Length: 325
Image 1 (cartoon, rainbow, N blue to C red):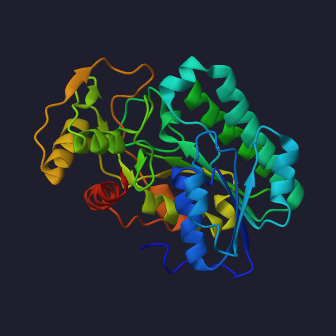
Image 2 (spheres, rainbow, N blue to C red):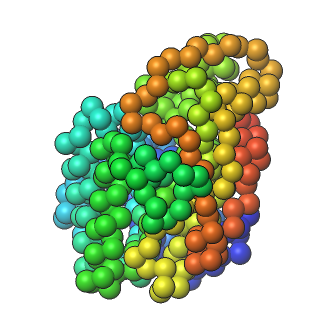
């Protein structure tokens, strides 16, 4: 894997916000394998305590139950920290349309509180999760940093605001920030339940249960699905990136797109099930196609994703087969 050769000092302390979530727990796991110290901050609103329990026996792991909407919590959590990996945010475009005020408080004010906490603590690098949703209605493919369209949801707006605030903290306060625009991340521990569940784990769970999944739209929309191991690599490389990368944002993807109905057929074949999906209405705020150009991340971060979509899907399916009840 691309991050296996990445090394950090053993006394380094990482703060992973949202560390009880899908991406956050994978980051905690990979960091602990590196032998560094990990502090996890999560209010468990969307994260799972089961993802915390996985690591509680490790003396290098510490869990703080706290809310990033509270500045004092963020300041305290940042004390003594070398690197912040900020992933405490609520996802889902449709849910953000239903709850814009909460998304503003949680995703924007929460990120700003973390930036301030990191600034006061003298953190070496502040790496944060952004999203491909910031490209909005920009029609051209692939997506290049600096060529964005009109935003299509409150969620996208929160991520764009986070990027701008991070740039301000680099410009005025010297905090080295790096934003990672994730493209449709999937993999182990991603939540398959609920109305806002990500499509791949939801398909897998429903097919395993013999249910007919619903595909929003005609199924011809495409996504640059990105396996979680590639995201871990991007975070590690960002922590060690040169000064010229500070204040910048980077696409994090594999750089290939897959058509949703084809993904569905691949999953049914892998699970040995022949189940026809139900086609429902398009979801408000969704983009039709996504495909990332990852050249900037390759140049400035040394990002080189190892896992193609097909490789990641094989591992994800195997994990869900063994871990879904």
